[in-house]
Image (cartoon, rainbow over all chains, first blue to last red):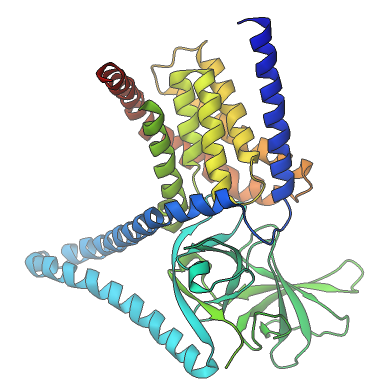
Length: 274
Length: 170
């Protein structure tokens, strides 16, 4: 390799390092919009993600079913033929049941609250263990914008972090970067609810005033003070209260009402309540 | 031709990592399939390939994550290059070298990424990474390595064979 070529390579490498450092720095803070490249990559791969996610769920349901069948076979060897027929039916039933339960929850929620909702399928999750995000199959073409509230049938899931044409990334309430305005349901005291930086799966409640009295078992709901979350949506239940060193303040651990590991469908709250 | 096949492998791996690996309940943490592929391809094809594939795979990973874009590209490029360099000195037609490489690379990747986060002012959840992530991640990545290495080794030969045929046919 000639001296000139080597020099050119070193220069290209240096430019690349500076560009990457700039990119890391730029994306280390919260952004109002994601780049065109990110949008293109996520939109292009969204159909493939949907396909893989559905396949994975189907296989998972089938494997779970196989476990049930093996125990049935041990107990009732003579009913093998019948079980094989039931297996197919059960597989379908499990899907219907899950869908039915979710739709019922969504319907009840809608009856109670009358918000404009958009049903979304979860098509992916963050590939790293450091960030708790999900990808949903609705994007800017469906009217999704950054910051919108995301719910399951039970309660608060999180907020929309970034949007592409066909997908949106939702930052879950358990993520360390999440912060939601909440209040104690029966007292109305305001509380800031954040994700645990140590990823315990719990939420952390930090009182906004030193007079707030929290007790184990208290239910926390959204305060309605934010632009996107309406008042009174369930967030979680206080399970532990840890006082600070000089007893001047405390941090409460909240068990979320939503099972974040099993999110298949969620819904977005569009605009203001009717 | 070869570039397209490697790109397709990385894309599918990314999709698998964001879908299948995140939905199966027996994965208590998400295995790093991308890292395993980068390490194994670097072992097979050497440092130049390792650096390039590590950079591109890491960049794809970053674009999905949407945070600190470029940090995975850097860490995986360094790891791909280093593994490829070390592979020139070792007899790699066995399971020990790839397994040890993947395990060391897993620790190195976590360390480098953590250092990068700290350097750019992002809080590193050290306790969580050390107590809850590292051990299961080593286990999953190790198993993935054992499952994939021989298959990738022969598939890699096929890719070069197809590439050669494609070039001659043009």
